[in-house]
Length: 130
Image (cartoon, rainbow, N blue to C red; front, side, top):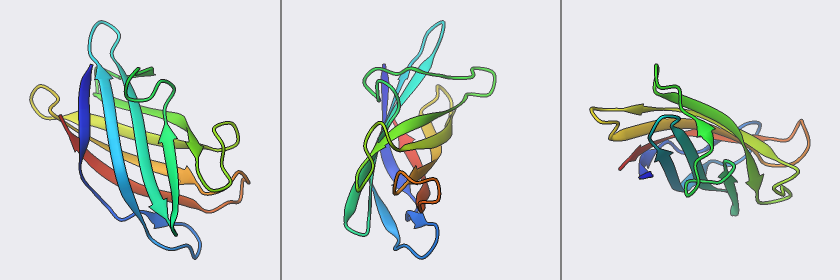
């Protein structure tokens, strides 16, 4: 499994009137092979509250399919933080691999800040390299 780590990213924007946040960490795991898979672990802070989002298995055990024709991926992922638990909040991410030999990755994310459908959400973009 190849591991990609955060090398940059945007400020985390919040829908509604929420404060801007930060991307604390991002790790993408990619299991190359006959049926390549990706996994994500992401942590952000918004208004002093830390939120984590992880795909099933996270970066350590990738489980999200990678489209090898376009080198893209995307999935829902559980969110923990604030009033969210792993069973009450689900965010999402979409991304791609880039560079000769897939040396880099980029992804966008959307993380709900509460379990209600109308809850504010935080979103941003992160760049990663292995």
